[in-house]
Length: 236
Image 1: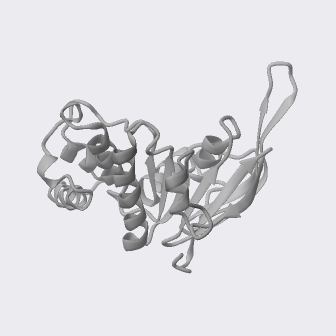
Image 2: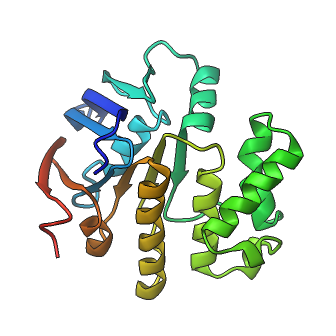
C-alpha cells in the first residue's frame, strides 16, 4: 500500500430496498471504507451479498439510503445528476465483468470516447488513447473493432477506457469473471501494476482468489457489514 492520500471514502453507508412482502431489506447496513492512492482493496462475499450495490454506491452510480461518500475529496451529498455525471467522468473509472465496448467503433475510438464526451480536443484524446492502449499491450490492435479482439483484449480495452480521464478511483466488478485462467492472470497482473504505477485507489469485487490475493486488503461483505479478512501477505 502506498500510504498516500485518501481518494475514496464511504462512511456509515446504508442501502435498503422494499421487499416483495413490504418488508425492508438491508443490503448495506452501516458500511465504512476508505481507500488510499495506490491501494488495492478486494471485496469478497457470497453472491447476492450486496457487493455490486456497494460498488455502485461508492462510484456514484447509485445513492445510499443514508451515509456519505467522498470521491477525490469531493462529497457527493447535494450534487445533482449533472454534477455527479461530471465527477464520474473525471474521477472514477469503471470496469465490469462484461466489457460493454461500443461494437461499431475501434478499440482506439472506444478509449477516446469518454475524453471526447468530456470536451477534450480530438488530437489530444487520440494521443491519450494510443498511449493507454500501448500501456495495456494493445498498441498493435488499436484499430480493430471489438468483434476482432479476444475476450482478454476486449477487457484490456475496457481497462484503458476506464483510465482515459486519469481517474483517482478505479472500480472493477468481477473484471476477470468471464475469462479463462491464463487470460485472467494477464489481466490481474495488469490491474496490479496500474494501481501501483498510476497511484490509483482501486476497489475490486471478485470471487477470484488469485486476484483477491494481490490486494493490500481483503474485505468480506456479509449480512450488510464489511470485515477485514486478510491481506496479500496472508492469502495464498
